[in-house]
Length: 488
Image 1 (spheres, one colour):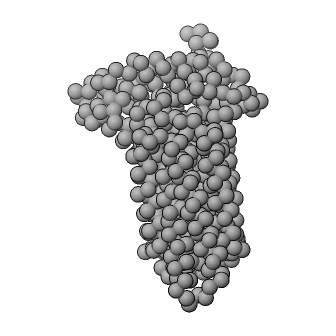
Image 2: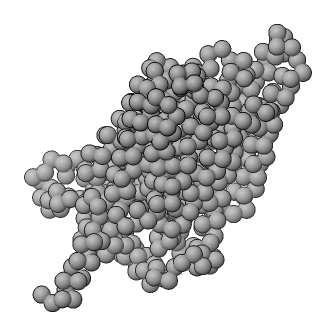
Image 3: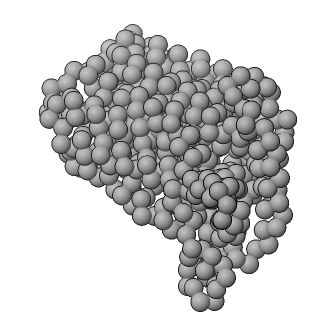
């Protein structure tokens, strides 16, 4: 063997995924009659759905992290003697860690694969929950929250990208929305379990999604589009065959992906930050960043992180139970969105969602303003309290129908493959920065003026309607390769 051959072989070894596709897939495709596992995954929808359900454990972890700070606020501040500002720092530190994770997420997912990056994300999550569970002061509390956030930052980018890359065209919207559905399930579980278990035990329970995710990753294939980009043709075709079913002819899809990868590879060596000014790059990046930033500036994390405090301000006696009710409603609304997104389209749901959020937030703001002019013992005060709760619930429902799941879905669909790592990291970082800004300031703004806070959020949601109308393209019914061609 020549020196050149040795060099090429070493280079190819370095490009292999962190968690390999696995030889049992080839055995299953060639000897399907002898393998029980291959019989189960003949149907493409079953195979893809199984993969999505396993990686969905990552967003469940994401949601559990978001929801944890709401039912535990009173207990943690009492047990550790924290002030409102110190607890606000704790609540927001997951976003700081997520920003660091977001910076690294794109490059990690590009170099070691989607499955490898999820493996890396799971480990700091587990360590972070243990730190919180055994915390005696703010140092371990804060460190645990940062570690959780780092893992969540990687998960928030990698999972929607992986799902978009493995899903068939006609199922991509619904399966992509499973990401946000899983987040809402994680939030609801945190709210529900927070009613019954102490905050330290709740932190231990937070370990479960990632401890199940790690072994689950060994039983699913790597993204075929990533394998194709890395030049691993055999693994790419095997992975795609497993995902589409062993009886399915994948020739057309294989050729489309190969053409797209070949086209992007010609430009990949020259893509730098300066190249993002070209329309084929800046326009999808602007849309992705815009939606993910507006998603946060609408105030949803301020509501979800501190919903118990908001309901107490509204005069609800059982604020934690009301918070769980909001979480359950959010799951139902997101499930409806998952069913509708491939039927109604992305733009329509985004418009309905942002209009609904605007109206809901105006109602909540008006209710809090008017409560300042009536007696707390009056019937009018009670009616306004009920109105504010209804408005918050309506806001969460509206968010879940569109602005929750669809920005992540569109980001994973429209970013060109050759800049997906760089652009995806930028978009995810922007989302987490503004998430941190909202969660850091929400408690302080609510203490200043509840009505004023919800008014600010309403203005942002009104602008979102304009943004969606003018700039967001419809991605329904198009392959990822067609969407890349659209921006050329």
